Length: 151
Figure (cartoon, one colour):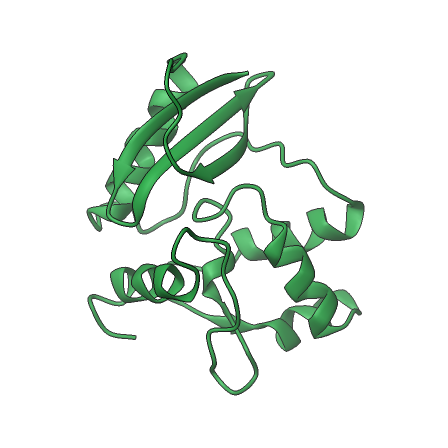
């Protein structure tokens, strides 16, 4: 599978492409990259995001593998605007589900940052969990980046 690793403010990231779509973003570095135009475009958009130049959302073909419910949750995450947060409960109400099920789908998000599960908080404003390399610290860093250093 074609992949590309690069450094970011939240640590090394590895992007994966299959059949013309981004299928995963993992934490860490993989050797022997297979650069493709799509992977380079995704890296450039992520770098623009980290630099504060990309605020309108990513423009990339995505093909995350998951259950139909997970895909519905992930689709709802992509609709959350830059710098805005919502709660697991609000997403659950919109999907006719439970906050716990939404949290489970967020935890299995194979394309974090691009599919912004970091924008989902607990009902009391708590950060909940995060799959990033440093967990909640990474989630807090992404939220601070989107809010000009403010959480």
